Image (cartoon, rainbow, N blue to C red; front, side):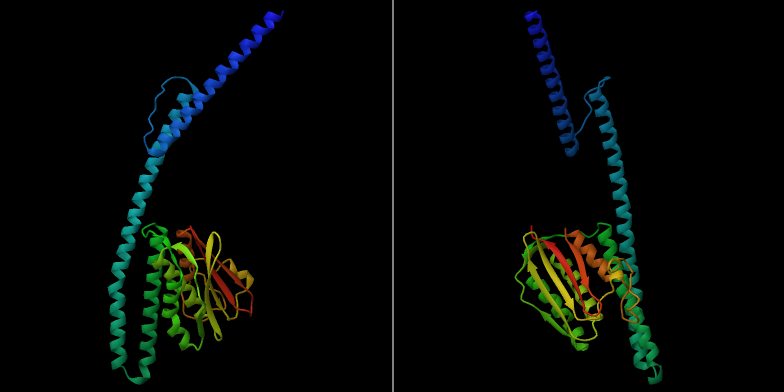
Length: 295
């Protein structure tokens, strides 16, 4: 009896070890298949009725479909890239001509008609700004423009953005302040400057009096750039809509703008692994914060 029990136990042990070896072999093959798929070198090896062969076949079909989808996506991106380039090229000359002829009309038009030529020039410049913003946004969305983040100090970028918007702030009688910033991050200098200029321009545009303050602070994982104003603030119900394309709040009135600037800021932030947030209370100004990764 004891001998039979020992033989039964030995048989169970051998069966367990054999099953474990089979399972280990299967897992190693699956791991190898995934590695080959990642490298783009996967090939079917088993052509039989086993489960492993069925998995290989389905993985091969999936990879083949993925490759076709990737090619189709790249073709669509190439078409969009070509379309954007055409739009950008075809609109530059007509708008430049409209602005040129408007300027010539202003010089030769009687005094009582210059308001009309001034309005025409303003609308042409608005159209130019809109097309420029749309082209930039479309290029980012389509992956035509690639961010090239690199480690660096945010100080020079902040200084450049503030210097660029200083005349506009002075024209409105606003104080544009830059607090000392030693923060560092991993970012694309050109596009980060674009985002900051949009945030500062937005603050200057909607702040009737007081000041706009730009600052930066470093945390463990992110650096935060704040653009804070003393304007009328933003109603809570509008905060979640601000970064939508073409959104303009009901309180903006006749203020210059097309509703693309903040949307572009969000696209730039996300393309660099960052994000943008806004905090505001009605009557107490607003603070827009651009977060950029530090590693």
